[in-house]
Length: 207
Image 1: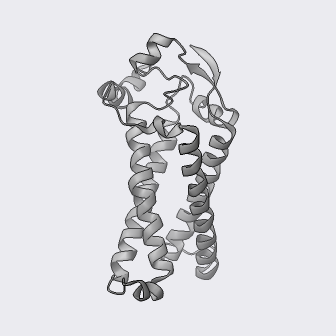
Image 2 (image 1 turned 30 degrees about the horizontal axis):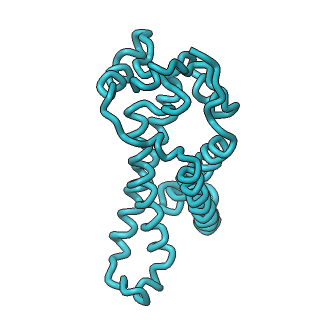
């Protein structure tokens, strides 16, 4: 294992900025939904909308970055060692076993991470993006031939996306503690350096 600079500057900026915006939107979104009262409905709605535009802009830059750098390949699904990783998260890590997946610079994400991240990018994000825009511009939908879309259906889709994102966030933070130390993954995403990376060519090809 070696200490390798694995997470680039924009990748770290994108990750933490996205996390901040998503948490802000979850907090304000549930207040707008009427779950509790903290900022007041109008302030919560305004902050929620501002954060949404910021997040969508960040997603556009992130999509561009992934495709221009080739980092999109990190999310190609694979079943290789998927069961081993699932068993590790379910049982092995509680017994002090070593992670079965050998991370490399070109294959940062294990099989379960790839499926989870791909699901966020291809399902949860578009669900929130589209339903949020439909909600925000509901009165103008008729001008583009979508006047028959139910506001209740849009709200339901947006709420579903919010709960799915919340579940992902909780699981993401929890599994982030499953490194060789509880803070190792978090430090790597702050500094860019990961000291638990396998750079053996044959091991990299085996993943």
